[in-house]
Image 1 (cartoon, rainbow, N blue to C red):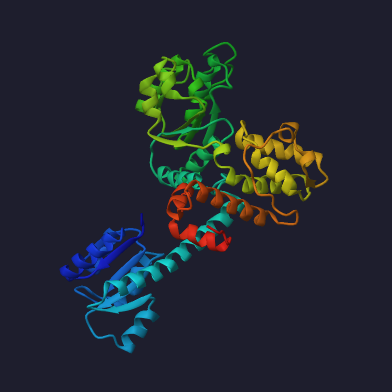
Image 2: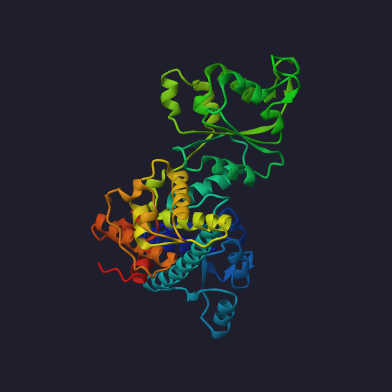
Length: 451
C-alpha cells in the first residue's frame, strides 16, 4: 500500500475534490489547504501541489516558505494561466520540481508525481545514510543499532524525554536498558543528576536507606546524616534497575513517594519535597509478578506511564557488524592497537544467538582481541562460538572485503531472504524489512538482485 502523502493547496474546491479523489484512488494520503496560511496545520508531506495564485499569497513566490515547512518535500506548481517560459523558469529557480497548467490530464499529473517521489525518496535515503554514519560513528547517545525497531526506539526516546512521564524499560539482561535510561535523561534537558541504583544488587535492609536517606543515629552504623538518592537527584532522574526485585514492603513506600514526591529520611519526621523523573527497568514480566502478588499492581501502573521494549540481539542480528566495529574501535583505543576481523569470524559471530545480548558480544570481542595478534580469526573466538553450529546460512564475503563491504553483503542476503519469504513480492518484502517500496527497489537495483 502506498504510504506517500500529498498536500493540495488550492482555493478552488472543485480542484481539491477531483484531484484529491483521484490521488486517494492511487492510495496516496491526501491533505488539503485552501490558503497558504493553512499549511501550518499540516506536518510531514512528500509532495505539495501548490496553486500559483492563492487568496493570501503568490504560490511561485511562496515556494521557499513551503519548502522550509516541509523540508524533504517536492513542490509542483499548478496554475490556470497559460504556461509561459518566464513563470516556469521562476518557479524552477525558486525550487519547484515542475509546473502544470489547468486543466491537466491525470496521467500527466501521476507521471510527474512519480518522478518527484523518486527525488523525495533519494533525499530520504541520503538522510538515512547520514543517520547511519552518525550512529555507526558515535551511536544514539551510546546506543548502537540501525534496524527498524531500534530506529523506532530512538524516536520514542526523543518524544518521551520531553515529558515528565515515568518510563518503564523492558528487556533481557545486556540489551542496554541503562543506556536507554541515560539517553532519556540527557534529552530531557533536566539540570539535576542522573542516578542509577540496581534494586537486585543491594540487600533489602539497605535499599530503603539508599533511596530515602537517613539521619545520624537512625540505626546502628548511621554515624552521619546521609541524603538518599531521590534527594540527590532532585531536578534530575533516578534509574531503578531491576525494579522487579524490589521487596513488597519497599514497593509501598515507593508508591507513596511517587504520589506526592515527598521523602522522609530514616529517623526523621521532616518531609522534603523533591522533583524527580523515575525511569525503571526490568528483565522480568511485571504483569506476571502482579498476578502472583509479588509486585504491587498500583505501583506497576504508576511506573509504566510509557513503556520501551528493547529487543534481544538475536532479533536484530543485522546490527552485529556495526556493534563489532564500534566495540573493536573502543577496544583498540584502550589497547592502543588496531583490530580487524576475518570474514569467517564475522560469520561465526552472526550465527550465535547471544543469551547475554550486547554485553556478551562485547565480552566475546574483548576475549578475542586479547587472544589475537590484531587480526581476529575463528580460533581466537571463545569455545562456545567455535563449537556453535549455525542454524542459518550467511553469505561468506571475500577475505579482502572491508567491514562496510561485509555489511553490504549481509544486507544483500537479508533482502534476498525477505524476497524469498515474500514469494518475490517487493511490496511484502519491504513490509517484512520495515522499509519503503522505493527503498527496496533501489537496493535490489544496487545489489543487482535477480528476481
